Image 1: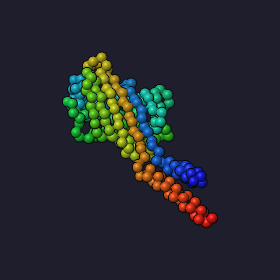
Image 2: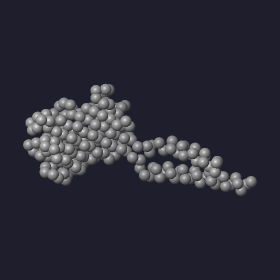
Image 3: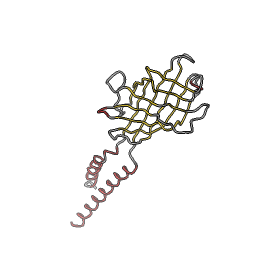
Length: 213
């Protein structure tokens, strides 16, 4: 047994090295609107509205999780600190959510090394109209990038928008954007399979040596 355990440890480390591609990639950052024009439609106030339009808004990065791989930097440090949210976010009026998928709504940014990220927003999944002159909209979609960290990976965007001071006053907005490219179960099964084969091979070799003595 003393010979089996070291051999398994070496094989396990080698297998993890060979399957480093199964490590998760993460995007998790927050942004805030600091300029430009953000508009809403479909109602007299935000809590009664049915759509948001960020096309003219300037969104800068306000916070980033420690393991974020978006290539962005917190404003004002560095050069990669802005994101673009284009197309209307249509969530319907009343208390329900929009039935039809979003069309033409996406988030784009450029990270390190010119990596272009594109997040396609597809579905409004939740709307919070509890606060007067404010609304929170949760949208899901998929994230891909030109360097291959993400490929149609499920993503979630939460938009918090408020009319500070009441109707007709300045609109403030913030967003959190989270994506985790969790390894496919098949990749972990493959890795565990290789480890199992290594264990069996070491056991068989040890048994053969014992019979030869």
